[in-house]
Length: 167
Image (cartoon, rainbow, N blue to C red; front, side):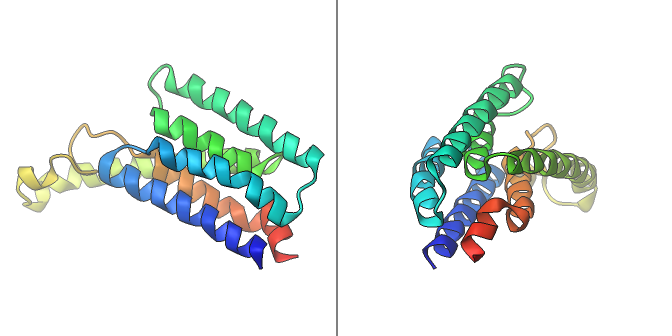
């Protein structure tokens, strides 16, 4: 029961990150930090051993390096880089690879969807002031936290975490 609750906490934080990114184009540091700090409790609740726990830590660190490498040229935001690391910490090896692949696919779908919506928005007759500062504003950033959350939620049911919580 505790394992299932802890997965709900993960889902809550990922959905909250997506919502915050969609509304403000930022993912707060406290949110990524909370995800990382709750993981040891999740590991204990799910019965993850010390070796596997250490592997989760290494995967999270490598994911942070990957996120920083994507942030440096401006391909993703800083909050996105930290959210990648926090989610990868939870998934561990090899589920993080599946998470990253699915998040990348969802990012492509998000980008195409935003392009289509942004082309349609001016023709919709909505006043430009209603679009300014929103997802539909021309030139607005893509809130990649949405794709990361979607990739995490898509990966979760097939993950080792889910199997441990269900078992």
